[in-house]
Image (cartoon, rainbow, N blue to C red; front, top):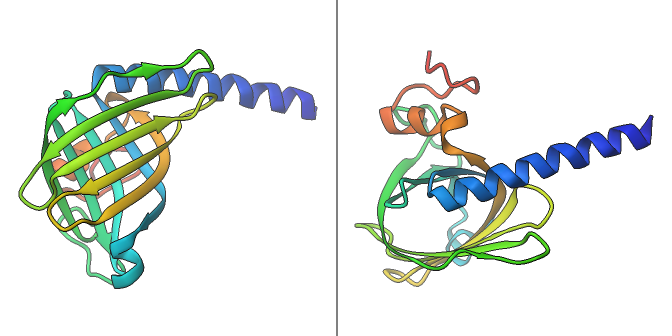
Length: 169
């Protein structure tokens, strides 16, 4: 039974990895952040990035929440920061399945570089964000999901209440 469950997880992880790679290559993906570290957060203790969205290889949205804040118009709390991708580095796929990519971004509140590294076996990724405006560095990790397979991006962009099934109601 355990061997069967382990194999099923390996198959799911493999499918998730392929979908994540395709999403990165197409420039349309969402990262649900599970772990966050930053120099700024360690000192201020309040800023959080909950969701990172890359859309059409031209826009990056950061949904950030603040601890103990009242929720915003999308009920996730905090604000949504919109930046534009000014340059995309070559997507490097290693033989072991690891994928790396770099994005240069520019926005009113956040300009700098995003370095993405996708694990070799699943859809778990690490992203480092350097903000040239204030020198802050954000270190995020979480799962990469295809943009079109969930309603998270739509909910953030249209400011509706976030509902896990994406219905927006």
